[in-house]
Image (cartoon, rainbow, N blue to C red):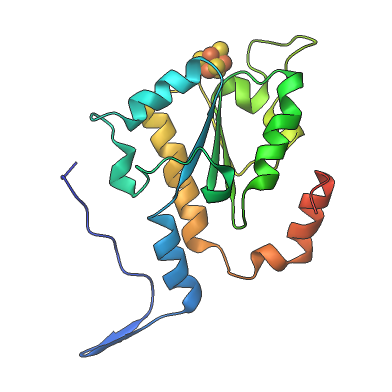
Length: 180
Ligand code: SF4
């Protein structure tokens, strides 16, 4: 992979001296290349995320080297690791504290489905407490898989309509999770 990549322009009309596109596309382009992730790492998958941030994989290439440990300054909640049922309300609270628009990745089998821990104490997937946009399989997933999941989020972010967050469908999705 080259040291840097040039971002493709959004779809639009161009001619000598002008380029026209939609506001959705321009905002999407800016957002998808400047996502601030909040790493919510509780166990082994978190170590893979550390590798993803390291020099070999370097999530900074995607404009996301600035991790946020404050939910209010984060766009993307990345849940990595086993989430005990007692932790469920905390994940929910962190999600609620994030400003819209916000996205969520469940990284690894535990966050996606409880993984191998089919027990009374483990939450069988974080989608029981927050809406999830992308699931990354694996136990643990390799950094390449985490980056693949991240790029899928970028695709969603880049193509999301500015009106989606005000739509009745989105509101009813949040209502299902008890979020106003
Ligand atoms: S999915 Fe596997 S590697 Fe990831 S937190 Fe669960 S047990 Fe650990």
